Length: 246
Ligand SMILES: [Fe+2]
Ligand SMILES: [Fe+2]
Image (cartoon, rainbow, N blue to C red; front, side):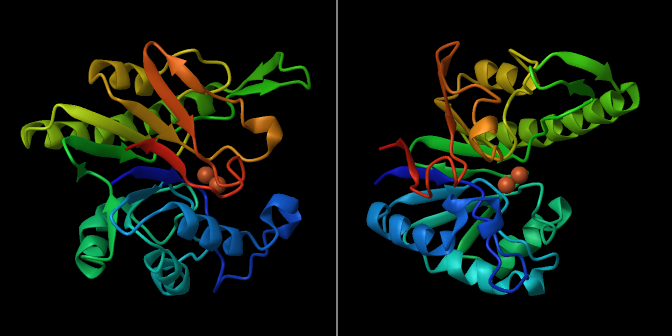
């Protein structure tokens, strides 16, 4: 039994959204997903998909993408990404009822993995309110955007806290924390997300969302304050699921 993670499948079996134009790594990426997930993930393993599953805007436009995910080996747990328009946070329960025994939607709830609770939420990392030049120097600041970003971080933190509390009330003391967005923005060393990870002494923080060479280093990778941080964006891993723990 092993725990794997992979993010940002960006499937478009129904939506007209060819991914090739984002670079060679995306050429027939769905074939790579199928091939590598089948090579690596075994039927009794758990695979957490960290958001941006489908380009479909409504559930009906995502059916083929979700069916593709369903057919992959292992227990599949899905997190919300910023592009997952089909999934309103409030309707998570409904999705879990509809896909019961096939897919689990992680939002304001938790999943168990042995003695670990898998907790998570989309998170939020702003790419402004600051504006940077090519060398990464701050050349502008948008206070309105900053205020809005703080609200989104607060909302996501409430959701994440709920996930942790539910797991704790159910008796769990060990946690793996999943986010779609990176835990810090490029100007931050720490954030409310790194703080809660430390508060609950999580065994790992797993996130994705960063695409392209120039963005892979946007946030923490490796050990920070004794906690491993794993970037699992599909293009970063060339669509090989990353081992989180065995
Ligand atoms: Fe993405
Ligand atoms: Fe994303």
